[in-house]
Figure: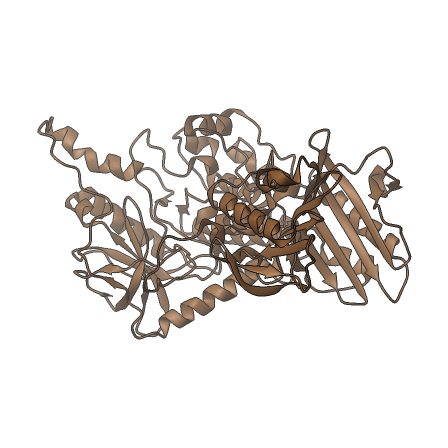
Length: 619
């Protein structure tokens, strides 16, 4: 997201800090990115000026600053400066580089269990720090958790309140927080204890593993009802994670573990060398580089030429003022209903270039977005009528359509054998193979999320050659930019999961004797190893593996895999585990392919990998 410009009539200096731009805004105020005299980046929370006419609001902000300044720890963003009495009060906190948990899961899929343990340990440590000074966070949610390079950070104490009793600033019957992550007692506007934050921690952990809150529903009232009256659905979690999360979500606050007890439970689990999957760490490195470039640019402050327009207008006089007591209640009500701005809002820093126009939706599709595309529906929508009716077969990474004369495929695939041409489709460069024939052809495009290893590849055998393929790619770009066809139940675990997260370090070592992190080849495939011994794991939705001619392979614990259509050998082997049947034609699958060019035991290794993955998948 973009760093917005300051208005020409705004000062680029607040206190000791040079303001670089606006990170975001909400009902209470806005958050600015600034740099201090020591060159350190800070996030400045500045209150909307029209709210300050109410004395209660200034008192609320003064209390917020005091409460926030008490919190300091390895897993929180410390408040380092403030001016509560100036014309427009503000506070400055450490700017944390990293990805909001919500953004990370949406872009790269659910976190693996070992990353969730790192997340849980950091959040529990942060809550210990917060609770030790007598505070309750009250709004712990994925948007308020930043995944930094060395662990999570809890941000935004904007609605934290002193735990000792109610104040005049908290009104009976008000509900402050984010509904999907509230505790039952918070949803009912009951007095809160630190156990309320533990419930929110549990809900956040579920979201990190599944992509959504265990209580999310179609409306806020229904979400609150589910929190108070129903049990959370933890069926997608592994047994180990259910043991961690289940007690946190107990409806009785007294029955929930304390943050210290959560840490003690986690101490029995093996820590991860790096807290997050490789793709998240790569994104953090890019963000740190962008921030560094911005901080060292003497002309970094963005100024727009028109005066600033307030993002939240003050209440207007309708002519029916009502009794004085009613008017005095307007601003406090707005505070309760308004959007609370985070102390630190993490964005991918971007400085718009001259002439920059409307952004391309396809350029902003993430790997998770790509995984949820129904490639068979896409093929059906873009195949020209001249090819005739095709019988489609779904694959984990694509779709193949056949009839008596033609074979056409649309898939996410590696593009190492392709080269860039000077041709384009809807403004996107086309990639081509070295020597297409008159009738057969394969071409590709590379949306941003797929660079540099893979792309969307369209190929055709005996069907009109490259003009038809280019026409199909043009149509695919149009479809993905407007209304991408999505798989049914597109939020199912294996549809959105990062395949690199499915194989733990121990499983990799045990199966093929290798170490290291996997490389994302396509949205659906991850690779470990080298040219002599490699493991490819793919996950997603494809054609059912349990057809009448399928060969069953017994795995551990009564689980079954299926042999591939190609012949097995000691050097090459492909196995498929059918995780969940979706309908009569499709299922969610995991495949393991082992290539061992100079050794033996490829099938044993592939089956060992699948057995290890299957054992940890949510039941």
